[in-house]
Image 1 (cartoon, rainbow, N blue to C red):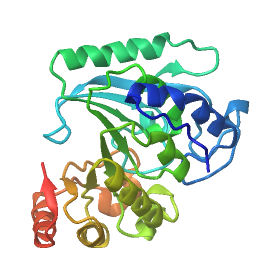
Image 2 (cartoon, rainbow, N blue to C red):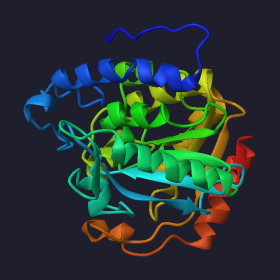
Image 3 (tube, helix red, strand yellow):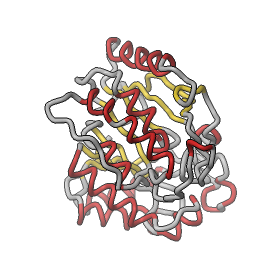
Length: 293
């Protein structure tokens, strides 16, 4: 497990800055996501995510589509992901670590990240309530993420949007850095995760991360309702949350739209239905979940 510097009495920006070098060393035998591929990204090797030592951002803008308590939100989307969800709404940009503009990496000075940080600071001055770091999956790019956070105001509300497929190493690097974790709990069964996202041991990994996040930050668990997956995915997710994380905020998302490679799966060929959403909400409410908008 990576040894993380401990700084007492310092602000979040200093804490993040102190961990950048440690995060870079993690690239030499990468174990930031649960694939634990062990490749040397600094030497140009690539694991399942395809990411190297440089970080790219494919989108940075103020948005209104997130949970009510977080918006308006200035969103910074890093390119590349360690999952391969066939229904991914952002498609290539999320999958491809070469999408977007380079913001950090060998031979890149801090100017691109400083420009990004200034855009975030301006958004806060103009009324944004939060700054969200997301992807793709931002865990792949923790050195750049920490560098960006080190440039942001300590008093800003920072939100970590993640697929919850990170490791203990990633959690150590993130501890005390983000105020809110918005974590996806996509699949209620490993068989669905393997078929739709090509990932194994999904349930164990995600639950470990959710338990940790609930202890160390405000946690919002998101679940995207997918056609044909209410009973196999939402019901097990809802029951586990009710039993293991009672009171945690649960964001039930009904905006499924068939795109990217959804056509590979017959049940994902149509948009989500209002009927399924109503039934899912009733199930969650019946279990006593803290359902939020």
